[in-house]
Amino acid sequence: KDPENGKITYNLGNTYFKLGDHAKSIKAYEEAIQLLPEKKKVSAYYNLGTSHLKNNNLEQALTAYKEVLKRNPDHLKTKQNIELALRQKSSQQKKSSQNNQKNKENNQDSSESNEQQANQNETDENNEKENNNQTSQTEETPKPSSEDEDPSQSEPPEQSNETLSEQQIQYLVD
Image (cartoon, rainbow, N blue to C red; front, side, top):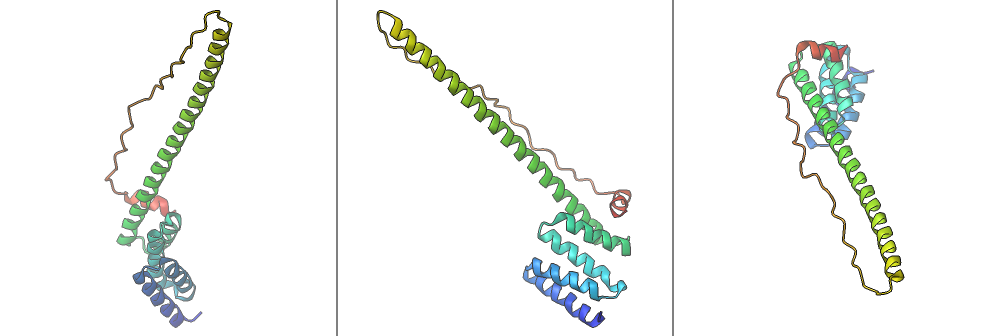
């Protein structure tokens, strides 16, 4: 473990980050963490977390930020980025939940539509049989069924502007 190589690899990670190649910056920071002395790892963990955050790897970002806070509990930028990552995670979960609800509703609508179509087909067949059995043959046109749709739509959830308390951040670190 050569600290000089750790410093070079750390700087390489910074270069990749500035170029927007976050996947390569992540690899460089991970390698640098293995090579750097303990007192120099805070910046590497912070930058690793930020690279993961830019790549939308929220869990990995939070893990890296926890490592920063273990070494420096007062690192303000880390606390801010943890809050940002948690908000993004919450937002993703809400979107995922809304998408699941929409898919569920679409499947239910589709299934109801199929059931209505089957009922309509059965009604059509019964009407045809009745028409064939009657002496005077009159044509009946089946009436299309109307679908009841719920016009009310749920409002988007309000975003909380609260910041994490010191106690909440400490809970995340422990």
